[in-house]
Amino acid sequence: MTLVPLPRLIIEPLVRNALLEDLGLAGDITSAAVIPEDHRSTVAMVARQPGVVAGLDASELAFQLVDPRIVMTRHLHDGAKVAAGDMIATIEGPSRGLLTAERTALNFLGHLSGIATVTAGIVEAISGTKASIVCTRKTTPGLRALEKYAVRAGGGRNHRFALHDAVLIKDNHVAVAGGVTEAIRRAKAGVGHMAKIEVEVDTLDQLREAMAEGVDAVLLDNMTPDQLREAVGIVAGRAITEASGRVTPSTAATIAASGVDLISVGWVTHSAPTLDIGLDWKAVA
Picture 1 (cartoon, helix red, strand yellow):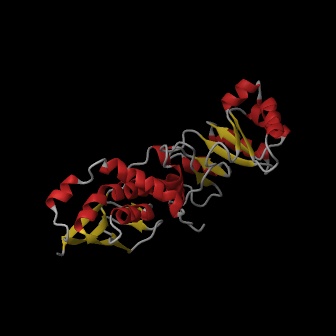
Picture 2 (cartoon, helix red, strand yellow):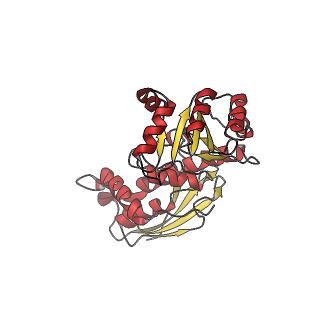
Picture 3 (cartoon, one colour):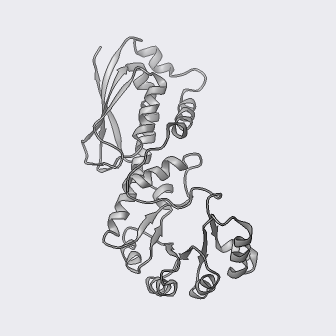
């Protein structure tokens, strides 16, 4: 799957907001006081631990928005695997701007690379099966587009982006509607023919009820591997099957072996540790 970069019009407002949060009303008073205005440096962006890179566009934009004279030369690309000590990019320009943008640039790159790294790990755990890893809406408010991009950089796929692009009938929808059948019928009557409909089921009886109504996908929540295998047999290719709940790198392979199409994992976005990436400085003037 080709990794398509996010448009700048999506990334730039997020980076600008992060810089404004850091600069406040007075800017970088430390660098302005300590660093001569005409001083220049070259820095190496280096991985401190192994992982998968993601977020280079946001990182580069942080430097360029602070000072357009800063030039970043990439030695690796998003989706690339790195070992500790690998050089990711070289950045050259006015030292004040480099210092001002450094933390924001590394925050984006470390966070998104962390997501790509854990995603790649669980994708590797299910290699050899037909299943794909997908993320959820459990994302940092305001950063969803970037975080879902990072999942793709790690070899995963995206679930729906927001509430508006697909119907996902969850257990609480079912409870309020009075049952699986009624919830599905209301959804079909309430949305256009282009909207996909997925329904979450907790039991095989609910699954049979959903399949009788006809849906595009079923979310098999917190089912055992044996239940998942039976569920896949009940669906028999008539809908996309998605497993969720209790998914870890150690359980993912067993879940995938049940024959499901997708495995949804929320923690790859909401709990991924930051990948340690730093800047090695060399003052040049």
